Length: 114
Image (cartoon, rainbow, N blue to C red; front, side):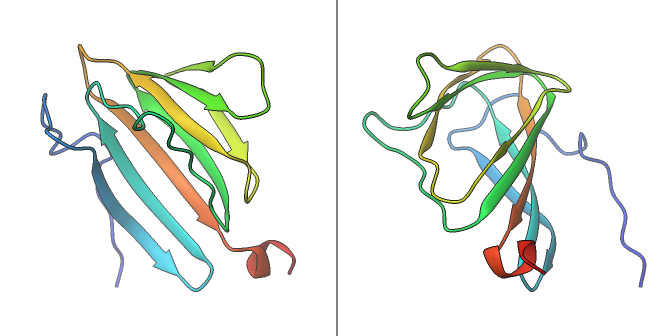
């Protein structure tokens, strides 16, 4: 079966919580759409994931802080970043005036090494 869709369809202008939609899942690989509307990581929270993550901002804007960097990175539409496994990071803010749409690709270490 062939699956298809549109990354920008069905997006609400305001969300109480971030929305995570899995678009594709295979052993060792997950692709998801994340929609944020003014969301940020909780205070003192860090993502510390066991898999690599490649993420691209499709629309909107966000600030991503990598633990060992001096300042957060501003990400706008089209910007992407690869975050290796166990690199602690957090979302400082996302645009409160429009939805920020992320495309995230999670890659397990076993898949990366093959």
